[in-house]
Image 1 (cartoon, one colour):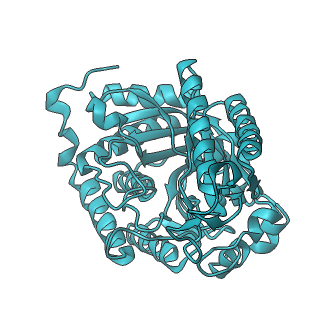
Image 2: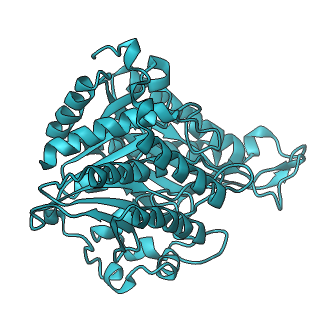
Length: 431
């Protein structure tokens, strides 16, 4: 890693054009889509559409061409001198989790727009066209599936995906996509909306959603790979309800104790794999008994919980998933309960392009910035582009307090450093 000279820490703060554009857009998005606690821009919702409208209006104000593609994503274009060449794409998503932060996703879209705005202001004409995407539907919060917008681009949404319902409204993903203008006839045929052969590369800036850059006091990091996941939106543990004082332990079929035992066993497997050097994380992010029937004096008959495994290794994902199913059977037999899972959802791991990693690292060093490599524990649209055969790369920007919460805190100077690295790497690639 190259050390960061103290005099370089605020070197980009003088770039008032990038700063003014970025701060204005972040402020506009916060004002328009704030929910009183954080930010809410749910996938394929009116607020997500409003966010796209805000960025599009600014792009047009800057003299850039804009359109909505067949997936209803925003596309901002700076045409190159040889437009027949595969274009370079950058950007990120504009949806959020409920009561999330203002930088998750939006930072990547604004970074791409700032780069195009600077190129246009300078009169720089790239050899190949550059397009910035404001993608829809990256977050899994509403429908349980991530990467919906980018998956639709490459014909990767199944009929089962499209039939999943939003718990709040009861509407299907297909209905919500149609409501914002997605060409559902093509999506339902699993027809690609974007030919991977026409895309030279995908470059994405994103806040880091973990604590590594903060802990290491680094403004940016260069991403090497993205964890994939296997998940179940709902796992049910079915036992038998009963009176808390009348049923002895040996006759109980207690769904809460069984679920707790299952999760404890899985935690032990997790620790063992980590000790063996395997990359894996597991989470049960939603867990509870039915509030309409649970009571202090009632043995719970049913528990519902979500389950997710993440790893950069497909082999590790499948191995741990097999452990999960095995433990469901063993605990179920021991406790007299049954575990039932809903549809398995998955996202493939992805490796970032080695040439682009080298290009971003060189740009960082040339700017006097650190070139630390870092894996991504969170998922990103870049994984979909990479697995479609498109060379892909990511820059992480330091962010306090994690993500998927209203306390995200990305310093604007760190963001501008990431933009500068990305701009120089793109400029070098499209000359």
